[in-house]
Image (cartoon, rainbow, N blue to C red; front, side, top):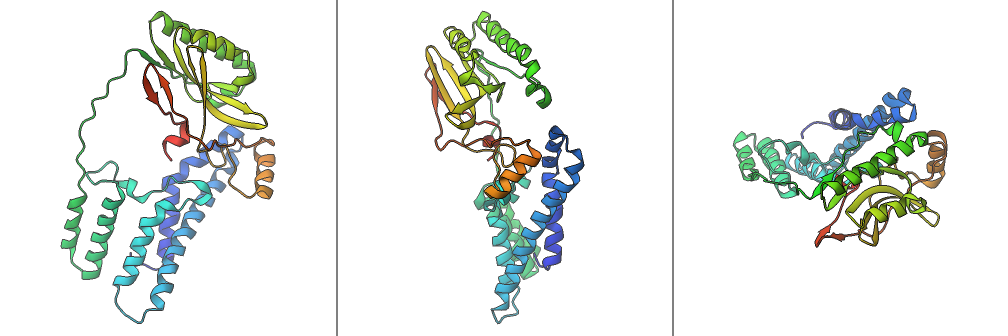
Length: 308
């Protein structure tokens, strides 16, 4: 809290490294392992500059106030840390400082994080560690969650690698396994079977498999991931087959760079051409879709949506 911009820059850089190093590993799926350290460096610099900027703003604001009191810069820096979870470089909203307390007895709500920051500020300002006892008020009690999986629902995990999923020569075998799992669930008298995201890595609404799934849905409800071609717009979607009804829930929040490029158009097109073989970005849906199966209302999250 008391340190200058240089320390904040270094802290931000290493937070970016240890918090987000794994993002760069996705480059291996594009045959670009050589770019992993470059992306990690960019991530480090992005968060280093962000933290440096927060410390710089604090210094500039306090420079206009004729006081030698240390409280004001501490408050500004604490507020900066508090609002960091609302700052999303390149649309990534995964950096939320309060989440470091997930595996602790301290809560992760905003009001609890504000108490923690206040306790730190007061203890530094007054040079009195007793103020840290305020953290006691952020204690979070966890009630054991007794969740039982519905015996009438089958959850399918395919364990298909990214390379194999998008290998069109392997699709016939993969799709055959999907229908085998459906038939197995029907034999076991299940009411619902749920498949992973894009288990059909094709535009399912333009595929013959759509009719086959609808036919199977006369015996069991089916929820499966697949691509959706909406006139000229590609979407990452969930298909819900119930009786004679097909519902499509398009993804609302897309993965930055992975599904949609957050850069300006002139840069976005260049990046897509160089790194993604000219692939077109998915488009997010403006509407969240709820659907009902056997009287229960569901709202599913596709990958990134569950963490955003």
